[in-house]
Image (spheres, rainbow, N blue to C red):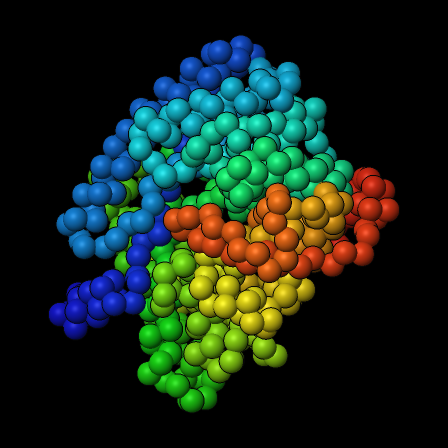
Length: 454
C-alpha cells in the first residue's frame, strides 16, 4: 500500500526535480505488411499503424491528467524496415516511399517520432539492406518524424566493417542534405552494436522480430531526482552513496511501472518493459553530468569520471530491477553532449573530450551520443569513431551506439542549436590523423573469443 509520505515525495520529484516519463513507445510489428508490391506494402503499413496507434496520444494525455505525471513523448517503433520492404524495394528510392508513409502515419496519429527505419547487418548486408542504408540521407531529409538506425555489430558476430564504411559516408551525405538545419538529419540516426529489441528511446528504437504483434514500452527519466537525493548525503562514504542511488532508482521506476500498466490496460496492448534511463535534457537540474559533480567531481571529464559513472549506472540498474520484473531497453545513464547542460559546460571549459567520452561509454548505457563535430570531418574518420565504439560494445557484451553530427559549415568552438529535447552543443575537435587505410580494408572484424559459449 502506498502511504501519504510516498505520494508527497513523488509529487515533489515531479514538481521540483524534473521527474518525468520520457516516453510511452508503442511497438508495432509490420511483418504482416510485407509484399512484393510496393504500393501494397505502403498501404498496409499506413493502415496498420493508424489503426493500432489511433488512441496512443489521447491515452497518454489522459494518464498525464489523471495522475499528474508528465509524459513528455508518445512514440511508435516498428519492425526494421529493411526486413519489411526487402521483397518490394529494388532501389534506395523505393525505400524512401516507405519512409514517407511512416512519416504520414506518424503525423496522422500525432506522435513525436516513429523509429524503425532500420537495418540489421551485424554479419553481412543483403542487397536490400544496402539499398535502405543508401536511402537514409534522402529519407531523413524529406521526412519530419522518422528516425533511423543500423545495427552493424554484435558480440556473437563481430563488426561488419563494410557497413561501418558505408555508414560513415551516409552520415556525411545526411549532414549535407540537411545543412540548412545545421545537419539536423544526423540527430535522427544511430548506429549500434548489440542493439536491443525493446528500446523505447529515439533515435534508435525499433520493434524486434521476437516481439509480440504490438507492445507498450515505457522510458522513465529522473537525473534531477537522483542529484537531489545525493545532495542529502554529500561527503558520505560510497556504501551510503550507492544505497541512495539504488533507492531513488527504485522509486522512479515504480512511477514508470504505474504508467506502463495503465497504458497497457487502456489500450488493450501487452506491457513490454520499463527502461529506466537517466536521460538528461537541456533543462537546468536535469543533468547526468551534475550527478557526477555531486558525487565529487569538479566537472564531468575530471579524473575519476569513468569510475563515478560506472557506480551510477550499476546502482540505477540494481534499483530498477527491484522495482519491476520487466526492466529492459538500455536502462542506466545516458551521456549525450547536446542534451545535457553539465556536459556542454564541461566541453566548453576543456574538461571533456571525445576521447574521454569514449572511455566513459565503456560503462554507460549507450555510447557517443549527440556529439557535434566539424562539418569537414572525413567520412573515414567518422567510420573510425564508429568502429572504436562498436568494438567497445562487442568486447564488453553491451549495447553501444554512435549518434554523431558533422555540422556543415561550422568548426571547433562554434555552437549549434538543434532545439527542443535535442538541445544545443559546441563543435568538438576530432583527431585529425588519418584512418582511411584501416577503414578501406573491408570485410568483418571477427567476434571475440569469449563470444563462443555453445
